[in-house]
Image (cartoon, rainbow, N blue to C red):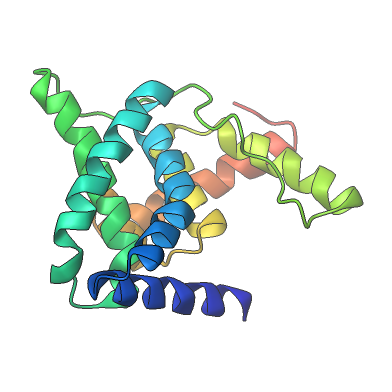
Length: 185
């Protein structure tokens, strides 16, 4: 139920921002800035570049917000804008787009504050295992489990077919299981 109320609140903020409510717009940016920044880290593998891409993405998001037909589509739409901004950076430099495959891009990836005790410790172990995945799999896992997006929304956000998202999730789950069982290969 908590996730549903958060999505409804985001839809309200988007609707209010479209009508010109400046406070709603500030709240929307405040709520989504960390999420979009984490996503840009996953895609680029560079914290400074991620900040630049998210800043540019916000300009595009704010310009296009009034054209958003389905308020519930805001999360996938915003993530997709960030993904495409990151991809354009590579293309502008004359490089072929490939997500970086190694590196820790999310230094703040840890259990939420409301998690406590043994559960928080176990969750931190799982999150560290996710952090060791290749970037494309890490992004799929994070968007699915941490950001609560559906496969269809992840496909839109990462600009790949739903089947590719499912394959990335399958491989990521297997790798996380292997890491947790000590069979890291």
